[in-house]
Length: 483
Image (tube, rainbow, N blue to C red; front, side, top):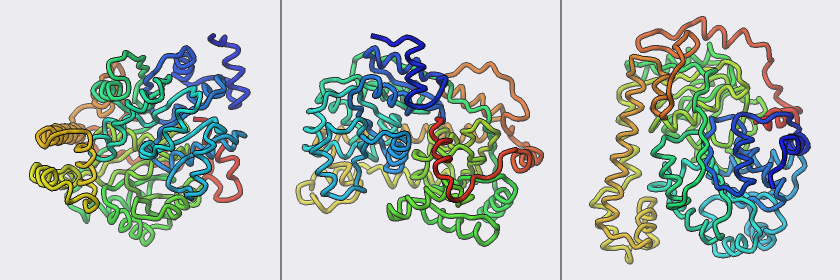
């Protein structure tokens, strides 16, 4: 039975102390309460997590959330704990073996259970999930099924089978960015031929000014970055495709500016990554130089700028990453610094992650002998071998994947070189009809200089003071939870 509007708003106020829903939230919640599996595409910062959290509260049944990053899970757990939810857990590699075993044995005691897809390889975890009276299955950051599954984390491709094992529970797939093609890929992987409700809202974040600056050489790129960081109002994030370059530029910014800067990437220990994340959240860092490992778990509201030092792999990744800015609704900016060699770096990364035909054939011919002595590509090939795919089928799969990645790279290069409105280009890429007119606060057109008055506005005219560095964690979390 569906709650009335008054009952739903009363629950929202009771559990989360909000008086109104954000765009899309109520529609998603009502679909789930009606027992309809749903795919929801909402822009970053619009409160996707509240949808499944409120449904779990109303159903009073366990909710299982499949999530890609430990930082993202930790962030969600902390937010729930802050509002008094004690029956929440994230089963991750960060837990000790003993505690993890106890948690799995007592999984029915928890109302919100966060898992990485790799945890679903463990028989004891699957058995514990089968024993639950599950209210809802959630796949957070569902674009990972399409973007990461085929060549990075193939366990995402098994989530459809997981649904079948769990007797097809009501399922919510959540993402901030998905083209029609990616959305169809997600639905096909999760739901097979079953028709599901897709709720889509615009990817556009009108308070983020979009800019691209073409750079002639790497020396100029460093100088321009220093100049921008000295002008733009903090806090800010700078994205890199290289762990080494993130460390190098963080050192450079510490030398050339008065800002508090650190780097964040998968090469750091989990404790170091967590410490840097918390320092940034609490206002103890002005700038983080990061790889894509930093982002999904960051719900900091007042990030004023995102700079891409390297070219992102595709427009979906770019939108995900610039969406960290301006979650408080205030004016922010996204700047992509582009040198023509950046495209070659992306092609190199692509070739480094996708096995070629010779490697595929060699592995398949020698799989038994190579077991236990292979790198990431070998592990990936072993996954497909165990799925019963032949050498020919695997070669065809990765040929299609390489073609898809090349198309994605071409799209973001077209975005960089477009002579029209960049915001319009993005909307149209995601299949949205564009009726809005370009204006001075929209984007930087090709050939235009970055407007200095815009930089001044970001730096000087905002009313709010910087977040306090210490002893205000409660207030910060309160702000963060207003997703």
